[in-house]
Length: 387
Image 1 (tube, rainbow, N blue to C red):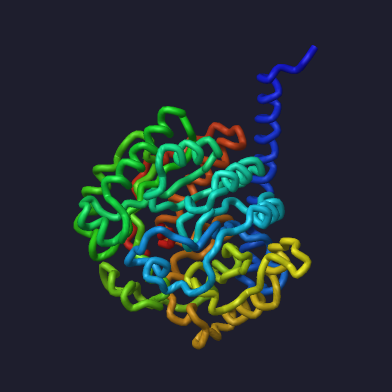
Image 2 (image 1 turned 135 degrees about the vertical axis):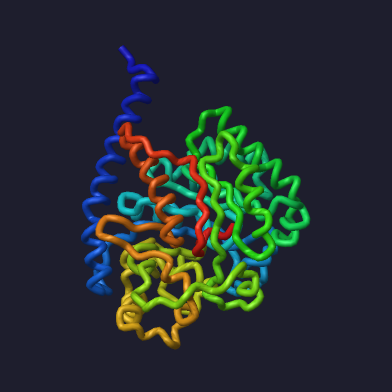
């Protein structure tokens, strides 16, 4: 007697839940080890990071005024990550990191294999997240993203008026982007997909008068969170961007080592490792995940001599001549605790992000915990998700 497709699918689902449950509790058990590594200033054998940031491409179709890419300030070569490199990164890191983004600098929908990347993460139990300007998100692309199993998406619409939006998102069309976003939400609802939808607007001078209306307008079924994203100065490296800040710069706080160097790994499209996305031109090279023999080794290189030296300088507070750290205020957005960490965003938004990821983990593990997620994030501080 043959095995039915239904029973085979149920068995695969059980195996996936068991794998994800084991991974989740393993990561939780390692949290104190990571915290000790950070708080004691370890620089060499640092445990696996919690979050991974993968730049599928640094190509973009817009010229946004608050973005180094849009302002043509990103001078490193343009390109697309090779799918084989991406697979090797995921193969190594999926058992250890809680999530990966598929964007850093660039529009991920410009990568022809972005859907394969999402599906590959899904097949390896790795939570995938994407931020998109949504200008290319037509119905076909939306359906492919949902079918591939994207876990979370940031749909970015900076403004409630065409004149506001199009002055910020240069080369975009407000009506078209609006239609794309609405259609994505409709498809999610119609297919009962579990993709976590964030509707995002960035706090800057041009948008402040429209944020309340934005929040009210996007309280729709299928929108899981309205993300009022605090302004990111990108370490105040570009005066024209800093001038868009809607208020005074954050107050100076006593310096401590930037936790991103222990908890996050940033990998650009060509495999090069960055300290974080604020080093958008790789001013401080940290090596490459692709070894000379062509094999991908993330941890070996993330813990390599350049990163060890960078961590040491942060621990010793020897950063006066270190670009972009010496002008950065966003480093102070968060600090890990014994059992918690977060993405590179202010603590208030990090908590919302952590709860969203926790709900995703609980569902994957077959648990019945309920966490209310139809929240509105409106922080007074600053975040990093630009697109």
